Each structure stands twice: as structure tokens, then as C-alpha cells.
Image (cartoon, rainbow, N blue to C red; front, side, top):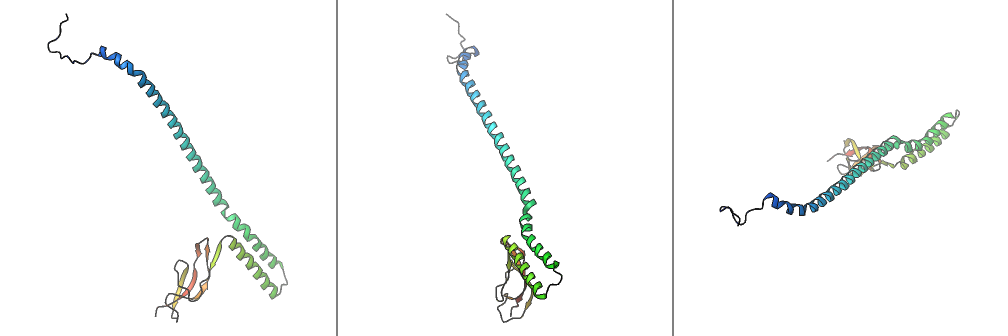
Length: 179
């Protein structure tokens, strides 16, 4: 017979020596799970690094493209103005031009210039008398008494211009004063 401690309970916890075989039984599963998690972590880290590198490359390419656009944005516009310059130089080269020839040359050159502006989506703002005053498109130079309703355009003093729906220069107008 073995002697037992009278204070010991029958459900006493196993000693560390008794617990070791049970821990060893679960250890291979834990090591395999840990290794799988490490491998998954390495895969995710690799994906993250690739995504960061891809985002950086995309940002760099976008910055280079923006720099090119800024550098050459005026190129198309300049090319469309070169025929206008040629026409003006040709007109000035004629020494004995008549007034009629000068006028025809100026009209032809103006047509070239307007076509060049149109190709660049630059369109005139020409409010007609009686149009409602629009502070986004017009600049009122003065208010004058008129038979027209208040805040309507009485006269256009200078055309304005839009470039792709953005105001380059507002039209200068006089506006009907309130009665």
C-alpha cells in the first residue's frame, strides 16, 4: 500500500511530469499551425510589398505624364497659331498693297485666328442686348437707364471668351439699371 496525504484531494492536478505527454501530443499540431501562419504572413507581406511598389510606380508614371502634359500643353495651340503668323508676315512683306488688299488680308488672317481658337475649344461670349446679365460670364462696366428690364444687357463693349466651359475673359457689358 502507498501512503497518501490525508489533505490531498482525489482530483489533484497532475504533476508537470504527468502533463508533459499530453502537451507533446498537441505540439506537432501547434507547430504545423504556426508554420502555416508564418507562411501565410510571408505571402501577405510579399503581396503588400508588391502592392506598395505598384502604387508607387503608378504614382510616378502619373507625375511624369502630368509633367509632360504641362510641358507640351501649349504645343497644339502654338502649332495652330503658326499659320496666323505666316499670314501676318506675308501681308507685311507686300510693300505696295492697296487698302482693299490689306483689308482682305486682315479678314483672312482673322478667320485663321478664329479657326485656331475654335480648334482649342475657345469660344466667344457675345451677349445680345436684352440677355439676362450673368455675373459668371459678364462683367458690368456700368448701369444705364433703359427701357429694358433691370439687370439685362444693354450693350456689349468687348466679347468675352470661354475655354472648354471655363471663362478666360468675361464679356464687358453695360446693364440696364433698375427703374
